Image 1 (tube, rainbow, N blue to C red):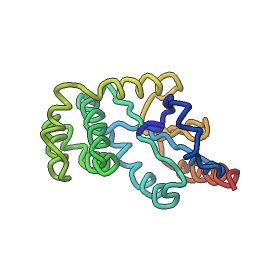
Image 2 (image 1 turned 135 degrees about the horizontal axis):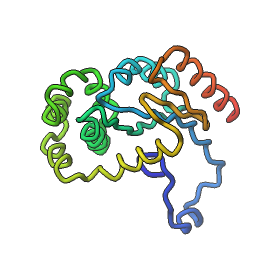
Image 3 (image 1 turned 30 degrees about the vertical axis):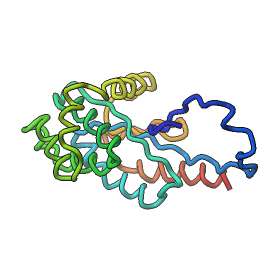
Image 4 (image 1 turned 120 degrees about the vertical axis):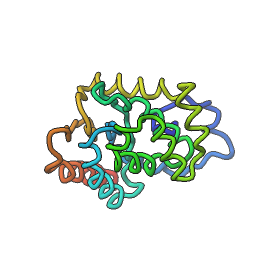
Length: 191
């Protein structure tokens, strides 16, 4: 799998031969896709649930950030690209939380704020600036948005786990409990 958790083609010769591990493979962690928009106050409000899920499950549940920038927020597409750059630099979720915690500043300051947050976190701010100019992460953001639309995502936050879509844009009430119920069932099935 690539860094986004998507399957990639591998050379089949890597899977056989004297270095192969004959032990059964560990079951893959269930995946929770978190469709998010970094200029969205509802996504900021959902951070506590995301943090609680990460704390409860650790690496037993894979949380994947998926981008769904909304047209009503003019800096959301750039913010999604910046989040991808943070992921490239190894601090994706930390960056996402920092930006979401200050959506009003993003509203006021725009793209310079995205670089400012990178600098505050000790990331390579020059590389952030370059990435926003050269658009190296546009295809990832576009692909996420297209996939989201294809499965019925219409707002953020939206969660998808085990094929079930849970819309948090209207209310977060009960969503974490539902996600935990599904995750617990999936994890119990692995034992």
